[in-house]
Image (cartoon, rainbow, N blue to C red; front, side):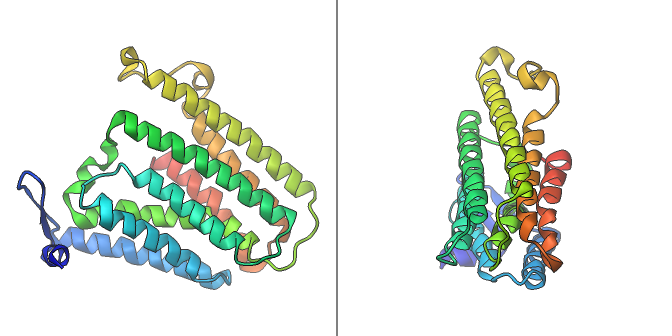
Amino acid sequence: RSWHCKHARSAASTADGTVLRSPPKQLLRGLAVTGLVGAVAGGLSLLMDLLWKFAALAFVLQWAFFLLHGWPQRSEKLYDASGSLTHIALIMAALTADQHRCARQLVVSMLVVIWCTRLGTFLFNRIAQDSKDTRFTSLKNSFWTFSIAWNLQVLWVFLLQLPIVVVNSVASHPAVGVLDALGWTIWCIGFLLEAVADGQKFAFRGVPANRGRFITTGLWRYSRHPNYFGEILMWLGICTSCSSCLSGWRWLVWLSPAFNALLLLFVS
């Protein structure tokens, strides 16, 4: 109850007594982003004939982490871990919605769980090594400004998992074919690129002498962000496989790799 009262006044105190306020402009911005994310997730659910529970699950989990840890601790340490948990929760909710599953549904769901587990573990180890992510520093001074990061993760998780949610919502599937083989091959290439690139960069940053320097060895010799390229390839592969059973508005699953590439190239 005391927590609610403090934030109803759009203010809170840190451990050293500093008051962190949410001016009206930040409040409006935070509410606008919350509404926009809700509108996009809800609108796509309606257009693509998806159960509302998937969008609701993403919102509930992200806001639970934000309200119980992120904001009280002014911390982003569980941000990536909460994203991974939300990904897995959506995959499992979609996969277990029906007892009968075909090979395509099982394989693409398994591939995304593998991706999520590896990436989530890597990001958690990175934040544990670095102790903080400076991209969040300016956001943590305001409840509503900090909430934007968590709302954007809701949108990221929901849009990224669209192909998995849709493929597990389709009743009739054609047999596994050329598109599946092509998609799974693309995914494997992307996974190897991302895993190797992340491993090389993690090892590079672990050397004190390399602090502040940019890696230019290994895969990083040929590309500024080989890990991003691998990530983009993986979601192109997933959507390629899922295309075998798409129709109508459900072709919007291609928003998944498009939005992910947008974030990686221009935001991350």
